[in-house]
Image 1: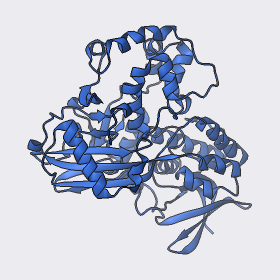
Image 2 (image 1 turned 30 degrees about the horizontal axis):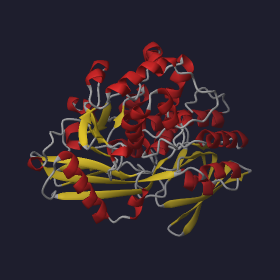
Image 3 (image 1 turned 60 degrees about the vertical axis):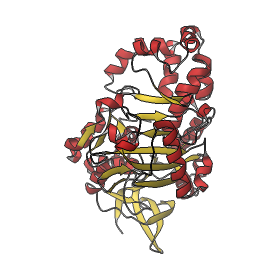
Image 4 (image 1 turned 135 degrees about the vertical axis):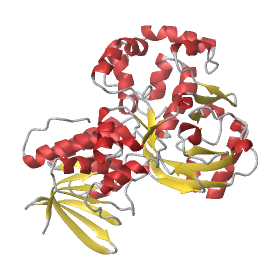
Length: 467
């Protein structure tokens, strides 16, 4: 019987980052995944000279851990930063694309917000903090501090862009803890942004609202492919059914591969699978945590890549893309100007647009056909960007359970996960329902989890924790 230091269940970015760090720490690792390839929702495709993504199109350079990992994998020279033109981001207001202000000076002249909304900000430093321990939605928080218009035309589309979620249900403490920390620490978001800038510089991390966007010459899959290549062969096509205690070594991980039962033995287990899958795995050894994970909801997303001739698009496409506020009553959440963001995404004379539909705003997307989704996106792009004619091709990628929702009550669920880790030493949870959904968040937590596992296996005190 082979016994590993750790079994990592899930070969998305969370599991891959954890396993890579464990290997660097000289731990023996087995990686198990139900899919056919590594990467989870990260996937890059090529067609007719275009390069498009099935999931995330880019990520943010928020922590030094990212570039350190790229250097370690030998892909630092494959990184490409977003073009300067992508600094401009749009929202839809009254049916038209309006650029969001990129500086305090531009804020005063922007048409994205009305004069009363701008004047409303003068009240913000004088609004009292919320009571400690109150689990407030991001909508309630922003409405209270900044007013309805900022909720409708700034935060609502922003939440849709990150979580495909509903700001009335998303918890500010769970999803935007740094925003809440500004209020709690400084009594004001505006004061916190100004006074807290020095503290943010010292921790060497970059706020997401100012961090640089980047991808790779060969697309986002460059990262997950490099991670998978640096690891031992991954056991693909394997569905883990349950994790049980093993009196001799610690844990047994039981699964099915090609219809036959398989078992792995390890001193520790890292569960890097989605919440709904993980809940079934741990029902026997951590039933309360299983119940908490079963309560995590996911939003469905359809990603539609559309190839257009440049001459068939009226808009300049000089920007990152646009987000759509709910109150505009449109059928998509937003669209990226993919070929404007990065070189090499479309051949000469063509452009690539990547639209996102569904989320909690339009969950019926899950039951629409690919033809219906593609047709709807074409109509939206015609209205917003002045596209005309038939695009040479469109590709629809579906993610029925795409993004975990950090709803009110989410932190209570995560406390139950914390309790399970304390009650079952050697069991760890590392997936995007915990610690943030961005790629940088997953790299950071994966490395932290690996350090926790290493300390457990070697019997040393744990020194890092990014949770």
